[in-house]
Length: 139
Image 1: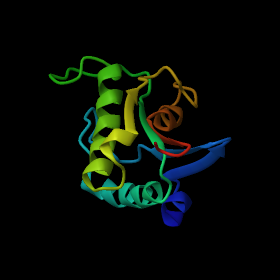
Image 2 (image 1 turned 180 degrees about the horizontal axis):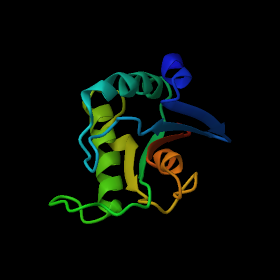
Image 3 (image 1 turned 180 degrees about the vertical axis):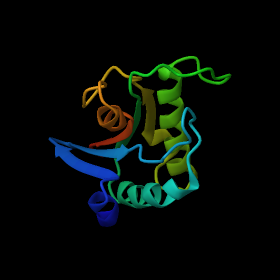
Image 4 (image 1 turned 90 degrees about the vertical axis):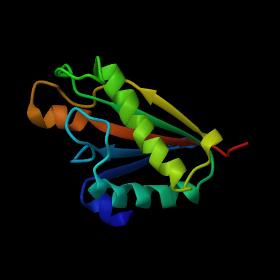
């Protein structure tokens, strides 16, 4: 995961008994979609390997910017989109065997937890992210 951290795709921080892994949305998803781009699988596999070595309860949270979802048959709002994106990441990590199905929770926060201003394109890009939190030991 060192390469992904150096490239700015992944940020890892420890807060008490939690480890938070933030994944930048740099091309992770097709715009306005929850479909993972195949180019993002390498990043997710690196993260998955780290998760497999750190058993615990995993929460995958999706975040969006404050731009409303354009006309979409599938997503009515950024709430739908953020939850679907976090579910896509969780599906991949579980499907590849990195985490157990019973050890993961999926949440969507839409634009309610910004980490930057939505007034600029750069800020909106920072707000579009997936955060994976690992807490304590499973079981």
